[in-house]
Length: 109
Length: 198
Image 1 (cartoon, chains in turn green, orange):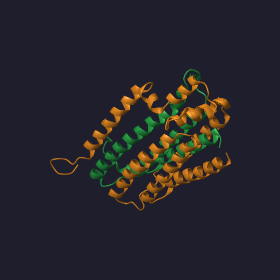
Image 2: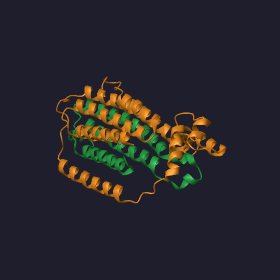
Image 3: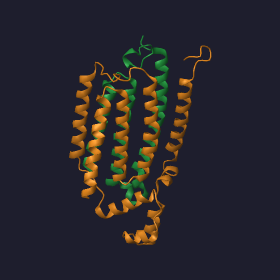
Image 4: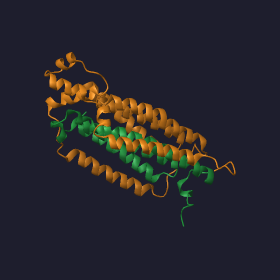
């Protein structure tokens, strides 16, 4: 269980999420894939906070928690994103009767 | 260490297998359930990385709130059983994701990371533990932190202190963002007063 192993697992999670968000037609599947990407990034941040030595560590020992602070922010933004995203999904379902992204073309000229 | 390795590999298999399931399984409801599995595996990673607070937050917010919202949305829309179809971009997207993965793995393995020295690692673990629990003087002395200044430093370090001192501006910005997003979501799903529908 080394630092590199954590980095590789989180990279795999991120890339699976990237593939899902680009290649799926259902908007709910795309939202789920975006959550996968958020989780991959969070694992990277927390692993870096545990294993790497920031330059600021010499002055202030509590700076080792910076990575976790960023992870907290990402979790908050993910919650906001999913609330808004599902609001858009419902609005889209009411106008389109479908959650297929290829049919959401109202904004196209 | 061996036990942690075994737990790590089990969690990795769960996370990656679940993630593959999320993007491959045709049934959207099963995909949402597999997403919960991934969230729980990531919470396990956080515990392995001695970020216990984040693990709890992960379970509360991701498993408790986000996954439930997604399952609600899946239930409220039609074509659940075969809803997870690929679009025309499937092959380019797979190639792009594979190339990015290769690049990221190369960077992760090739970079000469500047690791913490072994003597600092123990102190860092203590600080990360002090984010969730109060460490008494005896425990710290047992762990090799003996001088009173060092003990005070380790005891005072915490996630909350960092959030409301160094990162207070992002903290406030994120609060406003969350409020704005929730009001926006309410406005979006509110039925139109005239017709009763959106």
